[in-house]
Length: 131
Image 1: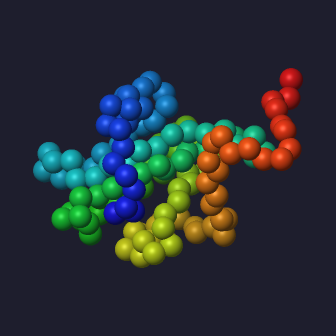
Image 2 (image 1 turned 45 degrees about the horizontal axis):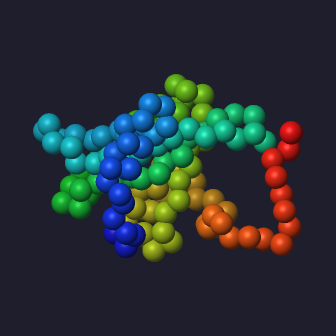
C-alpha cells in the first residue's frame, strides 16, 4: 500500500509478541480476522501524561467498508480511556483519501509536519544525555 520494503518477519514477530511494547487488536467477522491495529503507549512529558500511538491500521481490501476500521478505532478509543491516555495519535499519507474519510469522522487532523531522522548521520554540534 505505502510501497515500503517487506519487514524482517522474525524481527517483526518478536516485536509483536514482546511483552508490553506493542499490542495488536483485531477485527473479526464470522470468525475470520479481517483487520488489525498495532498500538503502543508513549510518554508525553510536556503534557504530563501518556498517549497511544497507532502504528498500523489495516483492513483486508475485500472487507473495506464493512465497519472494521471504525470498530478498531472505537475499541482503541475505549482502551485509551481505560488507561488514561491523553490522546491517540497516528500518521497517514496525505493521499490516503479513503482512510482519511474514516479518520476525519472519528478524529481531528493536526497541522504538524512529520520528520524522519536517519541514525548515524553526524551533525556539527555534539549533544549528549544530561545527567
